[in-house]
Length: 167
Image (cartoon, rainbow, N blue to C red):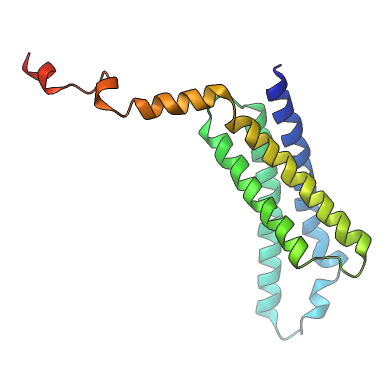
């Protein structure tokens, strides 16, 4: 296996397994930390909303982790969907790193706070390096360039010139 592809698979698997782990863990976070005790019992809609948001967030992390792994193992040169999925993961984890730096969670214990930040940075690095390895692959750059060139009428055999039509 090529070293670039191997690196993409290893890094993506690490980032994805951590993402899936966070997703599974997040299903139980409201009960572990007793979230609903901080909400007045009369605010039933708020409890439902928090429960729904947490459920969908947890599910998103799991599904995105699985999608990343599938893309990494089925990666073929120039696959647009792999670039899109990895880009979504990079955007998601960049946002998470920024939020943890600006509005840290776990601030009651600095070990937890900075451990979370470190883990988020590791996950971001895994996806960002994988994406960078894909985007800098020579075949992808050449394929993109050829696709751009083929948009011109003189390079596309399917587009006939006026002279071809009259002869």
